[in-house]
Image 1 (cartoon, rainbow, N blue to C red):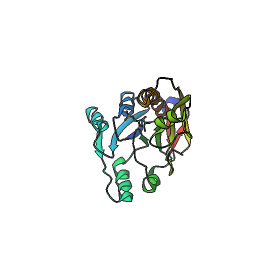
Image 2: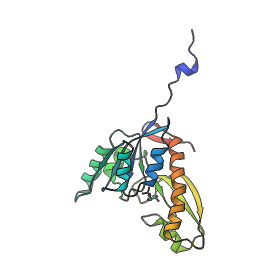
Image 3: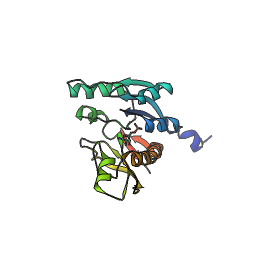
Image 4: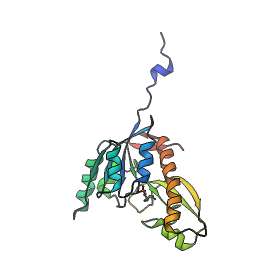
Length: 201
Ligand code: GRF
């Protein structure tokens, strides 16, 4: 008897995702809330105690804080150990630069969500800088993490219009509501081949 294709082809297992956070973790929450057959959050790692760690614990997800001491290379190696067997690493509001010791293990499989339309307004103040410049449209970018600051290959972007009455907080909140959806869309469209993330979006 010949096997039908459905018997021959094994369904892709869910991607094992580790999320890096530093703060509130509202993007993390949406990633957790939307887990399905395409991805599972296996761990949350932070660089300091923060609400994102509490969100992981509340969801029953393994959580670990890896504090940065005086040795940055060692901290990067400790992060690699904490991230463990992830297929994909998502930096979602993680406010530290990942170094070569981390990227040696996870470059090509680490993505970041940034609250501006890269390559405009990279860095820690993307929302503030866009507002100060006076652009009329900004947005959200999901991109690969490389050795630069928000310079990796762009995966997906969504625009957000700036309104006359916006301040940094109101604009950031509107951008974050877009970021929360976009990062889930990207994860659902992701596969890993030869330790590289392939995203068909
Ligand atoms: C997001 O805007 C992310 O792009 C930026 O930090 C914010 C994280 O928000 N790097 P939250 O902690 O998930 O609420």
